[in-house]
Each structure stands twice: as structure tokens, then as C-alpha cells.
Image (cartoon, rainbow, N blue to C red; front, top):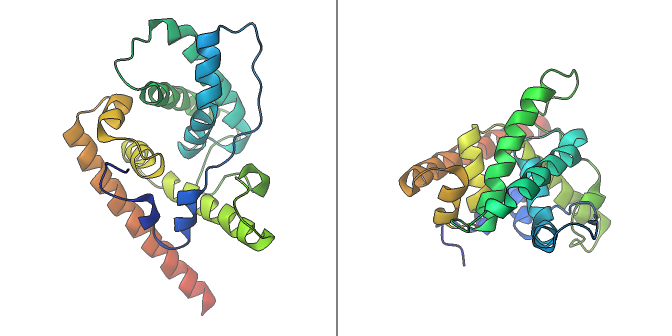
Length: 212
């Protein structure tokens, strides 16, 4: 049950397809010498971290490296994790910091900046929920559009929107993930939804203009 007051199915227009789609992270394995607690965290949350890194605006060519950096931090800090928040709240907080640091580094490398619409075009990265090639392509286009809209949001609003409306996390877990109080989370979420709705309206207007 969604506890944040907005069902993912209420995302406007073609983006409703995203509600039933999770971008599929590349298949991965983990070496058997890794301690079991870390291996469990890795296996259970790799796809979540991978999605989060993409949605936070990392350019495609850097996603895998950034995800690896996130789990290196997780590996070092896991012995100190005491469960004060959910595992996913803790992981998202780490991912957000690593993404912030990586984007600073990428800005110094020509051609490596993330930007609106710069997401992977390979439809094989998405879950095989579409029964036909046409619907599969439509789903991939919906996800690409979503990423472009996310890139237009302010960082703190995008984080809350991702966790609340895309990952369906509770306000309490979101507050722990972004280190803010619940009232601030509600305020950011309202603003993020308003930003998102306005961006969708602009997108639809542009599409109608092109059709004329």
C-alpha cells in the first residue's frame, strides 16, 4: 500500500507505463569470498541502487562504475550499520553522495556530463512485460521520457520524488534517506509533483505543436 498519498499509476499520460516497469539492471554475480551479510545486501538491492543511480542523473557510460563505487562504500560501512533506518534508506543516502561526487569528477571530463534525455536506448534494459515489440518500445520511450523529466528537477526534489512516487517508500524512510524531517519531505514532494506536472504539460504542448 502506498503511504505517501499518490499512487504511481497517477503519473500522467504515457508515463503510467512506468508504474509497472522496473528498469532491469545488468546481470551480475558476486565473488564467494565476499562476507555473507554484504553479499545478501548486494544481491537484494543491486537493482534498486542501479535504478537510483540512473534516476539521479548519471550518464549511461558511467552508471556501472558509479554503482560499483556505491557498493565499495557499502562494503566498508556495513559493519557500522545499526539499523537506525531501513537498508534502502541507508543505501540511497550513500548512492546520493557517491553520485554527487562522481558528477563533480565527470564535469572535468569532456563528453561525460549527464543531461536531459541522455539515457540508454537499448530496450533490452527494461523488464520484459510488454507482449509485443511495439509495446516494448513504447515502454522504453516512457522510461526515457521519465528520466528526461527527472533531469529537469532540482536535486532535493528529485530525490524525494524518486523515493516516494517511483520506489513507493514511506515518508519516514525517505526522511532517513535524505536526512530531512517529515514536514520538509512533504513540502519537497508537493513541489516536486508540481514541477513534474508542469513539465508533463510542457511536453504535451510541444508534442501537439510538432503534430500540427
